[in-house]
Image (cartoon, rainbow, N blue to C red):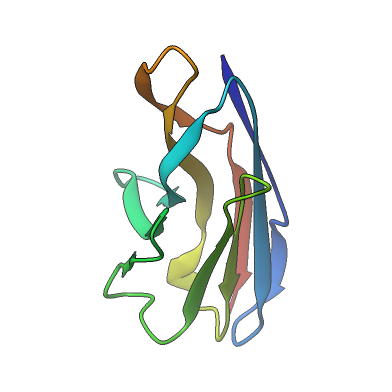
Length: 120
């Protein structure tokens, strides 16, 4: 089993910044992609940013230029730095990891989420 634990959410004013952190632990041989999704009130969960083990990144158009994802493959951790936050960034942010374990089984895991609230 694999566990993902997020931290760093909170209440911030529009224009402010937050840094989210996620650590993966458990039966991990490698993490193929690791990233962040969010669910805003009344909306479906959407991709925010993701990074492959090779360093390729993908960002939602709504956060490009304001968000930076960074991974530490050796520590199985991922950060999401978000600047110039907007009220529409409000939501529950979930860490996501595509993991291969020591039995060569591959699965996708989710954290429980961390709440980000941006006030106008």
